[in-house]
Amino acid sequence: MIERLEVISSHTPRHKPLYNSHRPLTREDFRRQRKVILEELQGKREKMNGNCNGRGGIGCVESEYIRRHHTHDDLADHQCSSALVKHIKAPVQLVWSLVRRFDQPQKYKPFISRCVVLGNLEIGSLREVDVRSGLPATTSTERLELLDDDEHILSIRIVGGDHRLKNYSSIISLHPEIIDGRPGTLVIESFVVDVPDGNTKDETCYFVEALIKCNLKSLADVSEHLAVQDRTEPIDCM
Image (cartoon, helix red, strand yellow):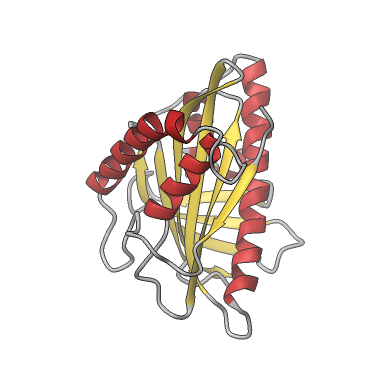
């Protein structure tokens, strides 16, 4: 199976969002959407296989799911949103052991040099992140919105720092799949952010998507290396 990273932009939102910027995230929101994706993957994968503009059935199911549940129909005119997909040749529990580390994002994010969590690690916790040179930023203050070890969902929101990503929030969800007959992981990450003055929506989405692509590529590299060594990072539940 060829590794691929798919970007599905939602500059023109059309469907019900996975989350709403006007109310807090709840665990029930994500459990409901998790049930939807499993039902869709099970019911439509076989039906759509090989019959979706030549791209293949699995890609079609993912695209449909993202358009329906990772887009934002309540975006303001000054905001943009997008979603990305990555297939990783490593079990979901191993990949999740890296993704869930709100206190150590540098385990796989190449642009982060240092991270300090302020206070106890819990929902609402803040982390101060130092960004490596080469990016138009030096620090970022981020809040943990959701960490669900059962559903494999992490959500964060940027609340401060020296950068231009204002009102940025993201959700990353992991889903088990089979790749080349072995356990693999489907990773979906979506975001919404304000468009900075002087930039267009396309420019803003292109910049954020490029960062996420690098993060997901690094996540795949680290996870697949650990999978070859049959190692999984320990998970200490909050």
